[in-house]
Image (cartoon, rainbow, N blue to C red; front, top):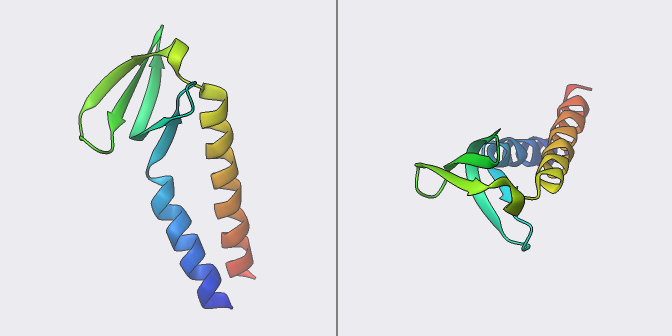
Amino acid sequence: MKSILLFTAFCLLLSAATVKLYLKDGTYQLASEYKVEGDRVRYLSADRGEWEEIPVSLVDLEKTQAVMRESAAEVAALSQALGS
């Protein structure tokens, strides 16, 4: 059981390195990191390895941040379970 939890935690940590930048049309862009600069979102494309820009009006920042918080909570819960 502990090895399954360890494997799951490892997979979640790997996926945490890539952010799904959710767009309002229901799609997403894979990014290594992103930042909001005025009316633009700059992101380092995980696919192309280059910085790209998109209008902030096309990005669902609330969903992006909510999913990131959920992933962080899952990783914290698993690491706590492994520590006990």
